[in-house]
Length: 169
Image (cartoon, rainbow, N blue to C red; front, side):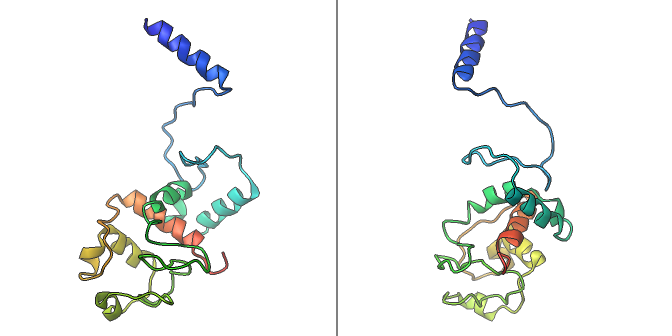
């Protein structure tokens, strides 16, 4: 029975023109080009190479991040934040150009008093601490998000933001 199920599965995969994906134990890094589950598999293009180069040029440890994994983590953020140049604020501010920007200064966004009273410029360290647990990092802010507790996921999403929120991007 087991052999029959395996044979039927292989025939079904062959009929679809797909083959089973090879298993891997490789740790994702900036040079890994795995695609998101929701996106079709893509071949390496100039855009992919540009992204990999942009990640590789980031300061450590972000230069070792997995851009695609960061993009997937950022999916949690998309319901409240936009990242593209000129996109509107949502429940949270647009994050385009966030690095190097003083906290609480995104145009047109109404910040909590806690954020208005804070005094720092967004950099990777501040964002890492914020994403770890926004309420612990800055009590009284209105961000209703428990945080990204996994350090590798935070590194990946910060690298993704560093690349995607660049002013020239």
